[in-house]
Structures are given as structure tokens and as C-alpha cells.
Image (cartoon, rainbow, N blue to C red):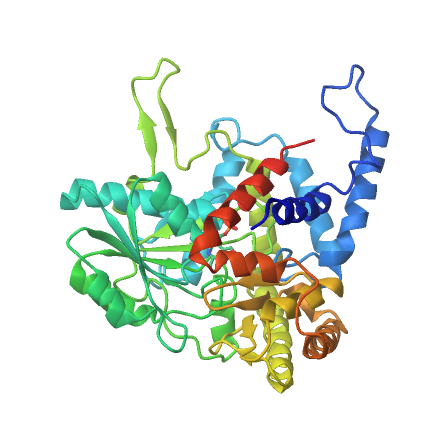
Length: 469
Ligand SMILES: Cc1ncc(COP(=O)(O)O)c(C=O)c1O
């Protein structure tokens, strides 16, 4: 790529990242005198309300899963009550310990744990899906080293597994073996079988995966893991709080949890379809023996005896309190109602996409709907959607985009608006092939080996920019 093109894309990205730089005071030092609360709150309200439309009116894929003002006001109140809590100090905040233990128990009961399932299922609360996955992968590394004598443990995962597995492999010096998908966009079980070696600590399946919203054949993977003596992590971060309720609503959901004997861990994000505020997820293990590998303990530190279950030391107890409150406030009936509304909206969207000439849905998803176009540039269509206010997720290998349906899309008129905008975006791209946005050039470069390095540089520049004032 030419340096000018590179600079142009960086400039576009920068303007998106820092829209306030000319309109609001920029702090590079602490203000000499503190500002008044009312001023600060007024400024924040202004910034927040200028950003709200996008997610509130259902233009975003995923991102905000609930967003109902009644619910968010309730969570804010819960935060305010618990704002000082830190589970690192159980003696001061036993309430935080109660909330977290109950979050884990309630979540376990949804996935085949508890007294009616496998009673030994246990877990911890983490800060999000990525942390849950990273914690689990480090557990398997240490479990494999300690109990199986594997010096350099491998993770075997389908290509559709979340980037967090790659991040974990990178951080914990593990090898990630990526395996192709079958023609239904599921993990290819035979290929997974062939990929397992004597060094494999854990195999991975998603329920469902982020890119295409497809549930992997977890029952087969469970058999495979049991035969091979490896762990099996089920990544249900995205769908964990949808699938159990979808099943109760009569949808055909294959077995994917601890009812299957080979499933040794499962991640489910409360901060997605659990409708908690951002910052919590649950990582579950088949038994406490495995969970032990997650705990950090020291008996020799000058600072005294110390342990912590997750990567952070101090943690925001208020977020766990919010999560507990969200779960209790929704209850089973609330999650059923929400799931019903999401699935109905997703059904209409799938039907509508299928009816648009030139578009094709990938596989048979439930409510994370990936689609592509065999004849048009799907990224140009996504860019046309961006110009209409939408924020869809770009996918690659193959080129596609997805819409993760949330409660924001169940609001009156949102589904119809999405389908109308999509149909007119397709017409626009048919009329004027080519693109006016950044998705096509960026994904085009990411798709070619010669330019992939430049895209990586672009991502790093973007990351650097986030901390520029
Ligand atoms: C299937 C899946 N796993 C893991 C994650 C990572 O979750 P987080 O962004 O909370 O770290 C996501 C996020 O969308 C996901 O969809």
C-alpha cells in the first residue's frame, strides 16, 4: 500500500476515534483545581447522549444486549450501592462473595451443574469472555504439565473459535492448532481428531461461535475428548444465556454442556445475554480439582498470605453485584421472554435476508446471522450499510458480515428498517460496483499475504491512537 493511502486510512480512523478533540477541552495534566460535579456530569451527559442513538435505536450488531432505560437505571442504582466493594477483601465485603458464589451456582445450573446435574460443577466470576477463556487455557496448560507431563501443551480449536484462544496461546506460550470447518460451518470433528497429538491439552468447541453463530457438534467433540484424554472447553460466551432458554422455548438445541461427560469447562458471559453491565463473565469447570489450577496463591510474599482467583487482584465488586441483581431481576421468566423476542426478530431477519436477491446466509444460525454475497462485494454492502447508520461486524475467510441480534432489534420497526436498508444497500452496490468505504480496502489487504503485515501495522496504529489525546 502506498504511504499516502496508509495515511488516509489512518486519518479516517483517527477522526472516528477522536470526534471531540476540537469541541471539548482536552486534559493532558490534572486540572489545577477540581471541576464541579455538576459540570462534569453535564459534559458526560452530552457526550453520552450524542453516542446513544447508534446502540439505543438498534443500529449496532451485538455491543449492547439490553439497553432498556428501566433496566440500566436499576443497574446504575445497584452500582451506586456497591461502588466500594472489592472481592479481594472478603472480610470487608462478604456480600460480594455471596453475589459471586450465587452467580456461579445459578449459571452452573443452566449448564448441567447443580443438584439435578453434575453437582461438582464449579467456577469463578471473571471480567469478560476473553478473561474466562484465557483463565481456562492457562488451567489446561498447567493441568497438562502437572498431571500429564506435557511440557509444551497444545490447544486444538476450529478456525471459527474466538480470537481469545489465540491471545491465550500467545500469552501462555501454548501452541494453537487451528482446524478447518465442515460445509455447515461447524468444527470438523474428523479433522479435529486428526489434529490431536500426545501434546494436546484441550480441544475447543463454540456454542455458538462468534463469526457465524453456529453451534459446533459438541456431543462429538465430547466423545473425542473422552477418547483422547484431553479437556474440552465449550465457549458459550455469546450464546450461554440464550441456548438454555431457546431449548425451553422448543427450539432444537443440541447438547452442549456438562450433561456431556467430555465437557470439562464452559464459559458464559453474563455481560452479554445475561444482561449484566459490561465487566462480568462466568468460567465453569467440571470439578474443583481443575479449578484449583486457576487460583494463584503465595505463602512467602512480604505483603502477607495472598490468593486471587483471576488475573486481576482488586476487582470491582459493584459489577458482580450488578450481575447478580440482573440475574435475579430477570429470573427464568425474564430470560425466556427476552430470548423469545430475540429469536422471533432473528427469524424475520433471516427470512428477509434470504429474500434479498444476491445475499446468502452462512449455515443455519440461531440469532447471530452471518451473510455474504456470491456475486457482489459484501464489504461494499457493509460500507453502504455504514452510510445508513448501521454498525455490522466484518468477517473474513470467507468475506462476510454478521448481525448479532439483541433486545435492541426487538423494538418496533428495527427489523423492517434493517431489511429495507439492506435491500437498498444491495441495490446501490449493484448499480455502482466498487466502494466508498474502508471495509473493502482493509479486508482486501488483510486477505493477501503480501499486505497482511501492513494491516497489522494499521491495527497497531489504531491501538496507539486510542491513547493519544
Ligand atoms: C463466542 C465468543 N467468545 C468469546 C468472546 C469474547 O468476549 P469478550 O469480548 O467479553 O471478552 C466473544 C465476544 O463476542 C464471543 O462471541
